Image (cartoon, rainbow, N blue to C red; front, side):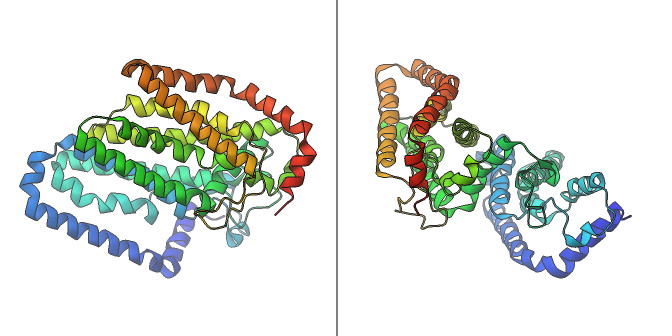
Length: 404
């Protein structure tokens, strides 16, 4: 029986002879970051220490865990399934799970961020504080890799007969996991879905931060940009309705389930995107002191009520081409649903502008948050009503789903 040390030796041997060349560019990047950091502190070290508090350094470096997780989620091919060679060996599943968990402590993908920030830790902080910060950052990156591996799960050696994947490649017949996996996997695998969200989100957040720091406070234009920062990532993929599912709707229709459950999964995906935006807003709040109550109220409102508005008639769609051109391509929506998307945007924007205009500041945030919580409370019965409307004309809509 293969021991854990043997598995580790096989992994190191594979990295040494076949995989290390893939990390040569990352080594060069780390060296470039080191040289740049030492050069900046050599010329401006006294000014940097005088102007930037130590708390800002700590928070900024800990916040690097978020882009680390996003990069691993998008670009690192994790697999929790044994390859063909290991499947021929007598390895218990429990031992394989322990090895996968331990292997993240020496995985090069989990060492990039901590090693890159070593000079910054010890140049900006006393060594007695820098060492614990480096260790915390290292363990957080290891945790990132561990969680991303659990999310990605299945790779090419897992049986295709398994309906969905649970922890470390085990099988489950739970339809909810498989359906929700379809939401984030289709988003991550399609440039047409995530690239516009990423580009416009970076643009909007840059504009918001620039205007806020110049003006010192929020004005109407900055509030609108803040609304777009929240609205676009949450509702961009939801505006296509069931376009992704329409590609295989005939197969989905043969499984025990309801249309309202698919809509609930899409709604939860919008809430997950809202949680990511809220985390980013907290980082901006603690680093450059941007307002926090207004963006949080927008997140609650858009994720709770705005997502529901976009999904009310999600069944009015045609198949969505996941791998088409990313920009200025509206294939995947019927004209009626495109109109519903525009109406949803107008309604959401008008409600936010009216609440902000007619209700003073702290109370307007409470009203928007309450509307979002109301949407969260009623979304299930609303989606069941949408399912009934779909079933009345299901043959008409399913005929549209068969069009390519």
